[in-house]
Length: 371
Picture 1 (cartoon, rainbow, N blue to C red):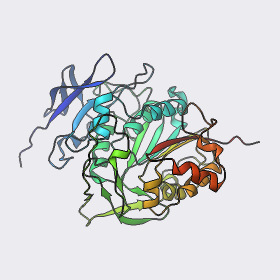
Picture 2: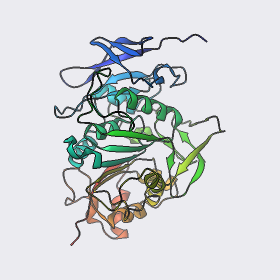
Picture 3: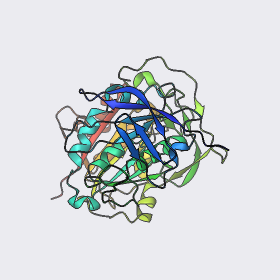
């Protein structure tokens, strides 16, 4: 069949670091993206722009801004606004996603490339990859886990667009128009994370494709996620992902993958950052990774009691699992801080604190100092 050029909405950054829609980009026959500012050559092995990545809809091509002159920005493919009213819409509106998470990543990772080959980060539940791309731009070699096949395809394409494949030449590439001098790499694992190797059926909210879960009774309440300007009414229906294998998604133990990839062990200076955001499966993901063998210096995870309970997890069990090794707080710049979750050390105190949480929160942690 004939190859049809795919048109993308170009998003450019204005002086306030926000993204605005502009003219369309064209994928040319020579493997380039033609933008308002010239041409940008894709990775020689990249055919991802020709794929039907979003069920015959055009993904949005955006140039993001981290608001930090010391770090190179990145390109990212997003779901169309009509499909993703949460993450993609937030990135398009603000030019970034979860500012406090960006601050935490900045604190955890160095920009200096000198030792970047020995700095590792793991992103469990990477979605379209905004935070993983940020981690790589700060010099980390990132292992990213994303279970949804179409979301992983978008993310993999973004990795190729930014020359961040783990097997790419880290030196300047005259064809790319960019330098990886201050960048690490990204390896995308298309699988879910759990405490055992298995398969599962994944469901997701139809108004936010990256919001996925293996919990059959999850309600995916978008209105409880502080959508930052996105519409607050959400469809009550759920959508099951149906890949070619009949709807089964592979679930893996993250530790098994890290061993397979030869990621260094017992070295918290090289094991720099672990992020977990898997819509209620956080404890299962953590139990699939021995934090004694892989003692990441910094850890952050989403904490949403309702979705944890939907997944059959007592929220207190998740907190106690992490607090055994980490000091934690609700603000990336205050770990620990008075009034944070850290002060609740007994189950009764934790339950009282949890009862007051109606929305999701991110919890930010640092490895406890050893005597």
